Image 1: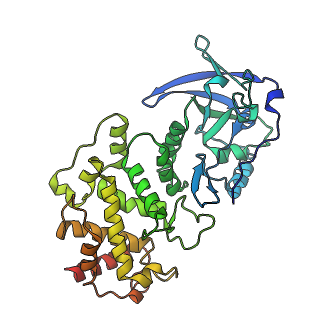
Image 2 (image 1 turned 180 degrees about the vertical axis):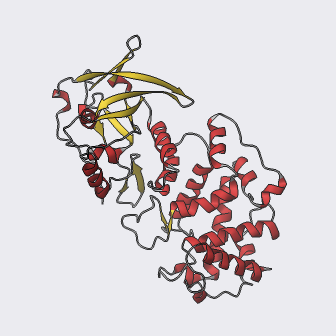
Image 3 (image 1 turned 90 degrees about the vertical axis):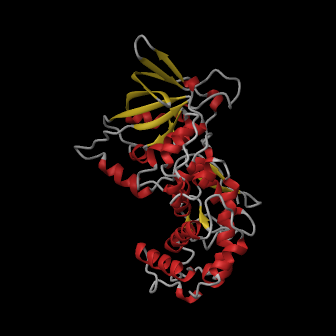
Length: 390
C-alpha cells in the first residue's frame, strides 16, 4: 500500500507572482553562508511547507524514506497554539528554513532580501507555489502552533539559500541529534543522505543491511525511525539502540571523525592499547565495512542458534533480543576481541558457535526477574557470559 503525498489543489501556472522584502544579516560559518531575518509569523507560515519524513511501502515491500522532518505531534502543536496566546509568549531561538535560489534576490548594498514565488518557468516543475517557497528544517511544531495566529508575532528565522537535500538533512541532524525530543533513530537514518563517510553512516548502513537481508539474525527486527514500521510486527530494537553500542566499537569520537571526513581528512588510527575498547576502529578507517557487517552477522547468527527460543520470542518478559540484552551481547563481543580474537579478525559463525556452546544459560533464563530492565540486567548478563566463556 502506498502512502500518497498530499498535493495542494492550486493551479501553479495561474498563480500571481507574490513577493516581499526583509532586512537580513549574513552569517558565514564552515558549512557556508546563511541569513538571519525577522519575519512576521503569519508570513512565514504562508510560505513554508512541512516536509514530513515518512515510510513509503511499495508492492514489493521495499522501504523508501522521503523528506527530512519527523511527523507533527498534534499534542505539541495544541500546547504551542495555547502558549502563543499568553501575554509573555516568546520564541527566542530561530526557526530554520531552506529556500531555492530562484525564489531569493539579494540587495547587498541595502542588506535586503526579496522573497518571491517563482513564476517565470514554462512548466510546473520549474515554478514554485507561494505556499511552498520554504521548507522547514527545524521548528515545525512552533510554526504549526502559530497557524491562524493573527496578532503581531515576529519570528527569528535562519534561511539557507539553495541547500540541496543532503545539506538540508545535514542541518537537521546536526541541530537535533543531541536533543532528546527528537528520535535518535530518525537522526541516524538521515545519515543515509550524507555524501561523506562517517561512523554514523557506516553503522546506519550495517543496521539497514541486517534488517533487510534474508537470513540475517535481525531480519525485520529494527525500527528504522524509532517507531513501529507499518506492516511489521515483532520489531524489538530501535535503530538508535542497535547503532549506539556498535558505534562505541569503531569510533572514539564519532562527531570528530565525521568532521574529519567532511574536511577531506582520514581520522587517525588509535594506538594498540585503545583497541581494547575499539576493536573495529582500524577496520572502519580502512573502509572494511563489509567485514564489520560479517562479524555482526556471524556473531548474532551464532547467538540466534544457541538461544533459538529466546531470540525468536517477542514476549515482553524475554530480554535477550531487546535493548539491554543486545547491549550486553555487544559488550561481550568486545570482550571476545580482547581474549579470543584480535582486532582485524573476522571470526566465522563456527568460531562464535564454539564459544557460545560452553555457556550454560538456558533460553528460559533470559527473563526480567533474572536480568532486570536497564543497566543492572545488562551488567548481570555480561558478567554471566564472561564467567561461563572463560
